[in-house]
Amino acid sequence: MKKSFDRRWLFLAVGLVVVVFLRIPFRLKYAPNQKTRGVYQAVESLPPGSIVYLAVDYGPSSQAELLPMHEALVYHMLKRDLRIIAGSVWESAPPVTDKAFEKVAAVLRKEGIEKKYGEDYVNLGFKAGLDVAIAKIGSSIPETYPKDYRGAPVKELPIFEDVENFDQIGLLCNLSAGSPGARQWLQQVQTRYNVRMVAGVTAVMAPDLYSFFQSKQLEGFLGGLVGAAEYEYLIERPGLGMAGMNVQSLSHFLILGFVIVGNIIYFWGRWKKRKEELE
Amino acid sequence: MTAELIGVWISALLTLAIFSFLYKDNPIYKFAEHLFVGVSAGYTFIQAITGTLIPNLIDPLRKAASGTDASGWFRLGALLLGFMMLLRLVEKTRWISRWPLALMVGTFAALRMLGHAQSDLVKQINGTMIPLWGAGLPWLLWEGASIVNHIILIVGVLSVLIYFFFSLEQKTPLKQVGYVGTFFLMVTFGSSFGYTVLGRVSLLIGRVQDLYLFSEARYHYASLICSVAVTGFLVVWEIFNRRKGKRGQSDQTG
Image (spheres, rainbow over the protein chains, first blue to last red):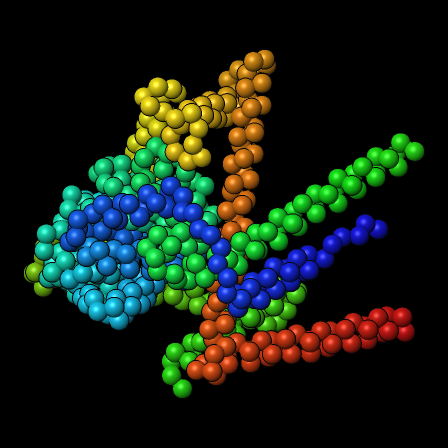
């Protein structure tokens, strides 16, 4: 009977690396790539007071990957005196948006910077309708979201004084964990209204966005926890991304080791079988 | 006991309950799984009412009825379409649901077709119209525009397109060019796999970071106590199962 490796040993090894090395502080060298620098430069290029539309399309299940970059982006934008209008076409996203805003506002308060809800940032909540909702947001934001997540009429909020549609938006920033997400925003808003766009996505989605970055439809994008760590490095504010990145690298080395050993065993077994057949 | 503390304990227990599946399928994992499905269904149902029905139908109709905004009456059309969709549940009237369905399919198809054509076709073709030399292009850069990178891009696009070109029989030279395309495809699949590993490990790191946070004294060592409880449960369950298995075997032989 053929013997097989119990894969639970593999789970245990990866688990142990993560559990043990999260408690051992050490720092690896960071070299942010062009995609991450693109996002950073897009935010840096906006004059203070500009409006950023932050499309938050992920729920708590993707928080581990996307919340670090979400917080880093919001921190960078608010610190640069940009104003943020956040909305979502994912029903589970608005509480996550609130969480990020509250956390960053508290951090900035400690640094002596006061940011006000409705004036500097707003959470519009959820809008049903998938691609149709995204296309509608493109044509009129207050019409699509007559009220914010807290139930206040958006036209009465100071941030909406001079905002009607994407003509007044300086940058579209999408954070997504699936569909509808970055691709739908590219299709329905970026291309149609020629808006400057950046994105932050889960690692699984990242390979899909390379072609849009190459064609300059995206000025940059952050892929998974690596993207978050690189962005935190650029804004010089270590957070959850950088904290997790060291362990991430070690886990990758371990998995790489398993892939190499697995292949050696496979080819050795095949060679042995052929030899037996010849004999 | 604050609401935050209750949330932390539930979160720690359910995380460890789900992780227990790595050992094997067990009742505590099943409990967490069923709870997740139930809570998700409940949340989606409530969101459908508060996030969709009330702001998109009830509120506009209420405004129209109060005379504030007469355009709200148009939403009666949406109500009618929704009702027609529900007729799908009755055998005799099932055909009526095809009309609102057709409207939805038509709208989405048109919207997506337009978006795809502009974003995924025209702009992407435009993105491949790049200079191969000249214009101060450097020979080689790890990232960004360079002669080598542009040649790789063009060769990659053309060879993969030819690999998926089925209108002609794949003979020489199409076969050889298509063969080059398979290398580009393999690199793409490898990159997707690498990113997937990255994503999955990130999720694990996120949960472990939370578990470390929950193991602090201010949360009454929630993670530690829950991990002891889950491990203890697994041990008892395993012993019970083995004894049951042995009893079953002896009953059969007896």
